[in-house]
Length: 419
Image (cartoon, rainbow, N blue to C red):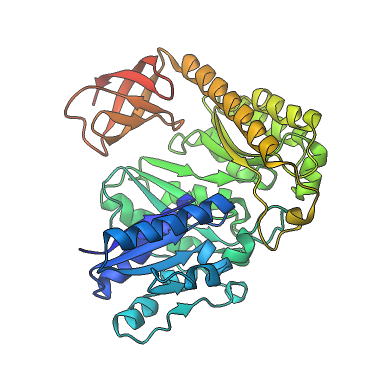
């Protein structure tokens, strides 16, 4: 058994899982399983614990290393599990020294340092992502904001940016290795550059990458905070065809009072205006968004505002989280809704999500796209919509011209026009 990874949560975690796997392989830790946890909800922590127990049953001889946000925030939870050989923090999982110490038998069973003391984020070149379609690059980590529901700053530490030159070098290397699309990831991506000299912003970084790495066909952003989007970024979407027209927005609610209680920095009107502006500049723009159902004190009228916002913003993809009270957060001390009501609202919001994706798919019929094939028979449009193309021989990483001829429940069906 070589090094294996079970990764939960966000794209940044997926990227860091590849970094940790590479470092473990370099340290000679064959027969190791790395479980990279998420802490965004109590359910995510439960799933991680369940996966660790299952892994031990199925791999009795493996060395199991537990890391990620849940391990950073509540290391005692995982240290109490006999199945875990090591529990390491978020900073430790991307350090070569950590895995060399494990290989040498010199690392304590639990090593989780104060993430709040970390002030820099190094770039890591990940050589493989299991194919040549899409790769991820971490450009930012941590968060300086304190949304009342969010425990992630306790797991990720303060906001810190990877220097632009390091990012460009990594993107260039990935393009030269044959990756057709690079996704820029971070915890609070639109805060990029605030800690760097020279007035660097996410928009300026995007422009720099596209200018200095002309061989990269497609650049994509992960989740952003609309209120932090700088003018350079907005203009880049209007002017750069290689910047993919898809944004996943951190909206969380469509009610202004709930947004205030969440300590978010935007109002519902800001979200609506942002989506309208971006569509004027880039008519093919596709939006997804995160929403929390059943936040403390949310009444029916407030929840109805969230349902309406999905329509008013013209969202295509909704990622729904039932509210989960997390330790160390102010929202955990607010008046809570009953779990049955939280689940019922999450179900209604998911029903709205199904309606929105159906509208989106119908709108895409007969349109022609440049599709990046993720595997044989399945690719994604520039707007990140899945499209099934039955033509044989369209291998992973190929970019083909295809027409959407119809749709299924969650994806388009298309035909290849040329490759």
